[in-house]
Length: 179
Image (tube, rainbow, N blue to C red; front, side, top):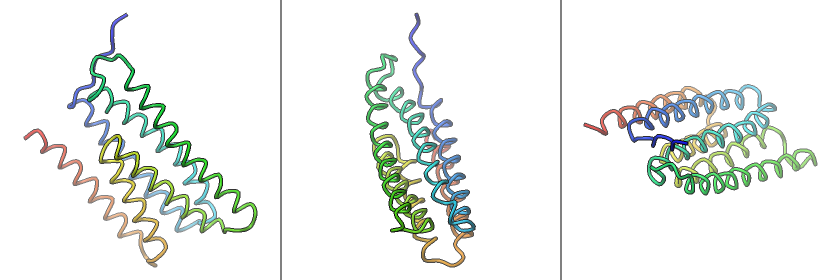
C-alpha cells in the first residue's frame, strides 16, 4: 500500500481560501437569519457548530499533513482530530445548555441565537490559534456580527462590506505570498 501524497503549501492554500469564503458566506446567511427571523437563529447557529467544526477538521487535516505529517504517517493528524473533536464538542455542550435555558423559559430564542453566535465566534477563534489564522479571523468576524446585530439598527450593509474586505485581503495576501 502506498503512502498518501503529502499536501504541499501550494495545493493547500486554495482549500483554505475556499473554506474561509464558505464560512464567511454562511456567516452572512446566519446574520440575515438572525436579523429577519430571530426565532430561527438558534437552530441555524447550532447547525453551524457542526458545519464549522467539520470545516475546521478539513483545514486541520490539511494543516497537519503540510506542517507536521508530510510522510502521511497519521499520528499528528489523529491527535489533531481528537483535540478538535473535543474542542467542538465543548461548544456543542454549551449550546445545549443554552437550549435548556430556553426550554425552562429563562432566555428568549432571540437572545439565545446571539449567545450561540458568540459561542461559535469564540470556538472558531480559539480553533484558529491551533489550525490557522483564517479561523481566528472568522471568529473575530462572528463576534463583530453579534455585537453589530445587538447595537446597530442597519448592520447588514456594514457586515457585508466587512465580509468582502476580509475575503479580498486574504486572497490578495495569499496571491502575493509567493512573490
